[in-house]
Amino acid sequence: MKNQRPYIICHMTTSVDGKVTGDFLSRPDTQDAIDEYYRINRDLRCDGYICGRVTMEGSFTGGYYPDLTEFNGVEVPDGDFIAEKNGFYAVAFDRRGRLGWQCGKIEDSDPGYDSAHIIEVLNTADKRYLAYLRSIGVSYIFAGKDGELDVEYALLKLKELFGIEKLLLEGGSIINGAFLQANCVDELSLVVAPVTADEDGMPLFSDGTSKTFSLKKAEHLGKNILHLQYDLC
Image (tube, rainbow, N blue to C red; front, side, top):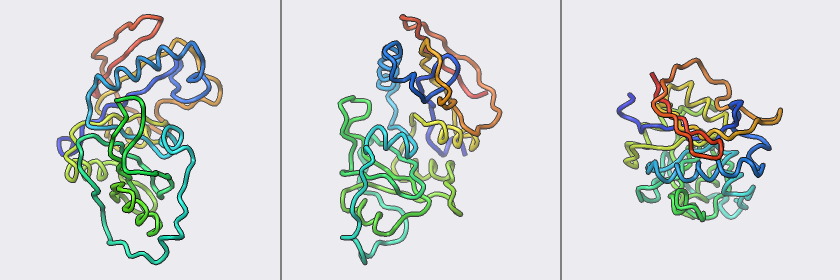
């Protein structure tokens, strides 16, 4: 089914010891690597980006959650909801519908993220939350059962319903691992900062599985920063 789903590039900033979260990301000597990460994000020219709930909350929603009481008793049709198709998407894997969006598009100063139409990927959600998403123009799709998201099925839907051909997978560690387990990581794009992470840092793939990648490009970006690109074998 690989050709029936979007091509997935896992694009991350890592420490030299392979961590993708932790205090090292806020250190001054990591900033140049982060700047390169955002530049490459724009240069890859994908149809959008995927993040898990925690990353989306930290980067975009800031912990906000709406008051859903005004949607008590509102009837919501079963199934997926397509608010719009704009060719550039922010895909949130948010299993139970916990993200508090305030409009249907990302508002961010970086053109690699700004104006992306938001798509929620859900397993189950409060009907009132679905009514809220509809009211602000956020699309949503359902994938999986028994409380777990089906990564491959979600990607098949994203291509079929929205015409998405290529997406950046930008973490965090848990969702990266879920994609690797589902055999849905086609390429790695790693910007390696010349620092080590603290003990709370999380690896590139949490609870992943054994895969083999081939190095297709290694580029020194200056200031002791490497950009490594791998293809799945």
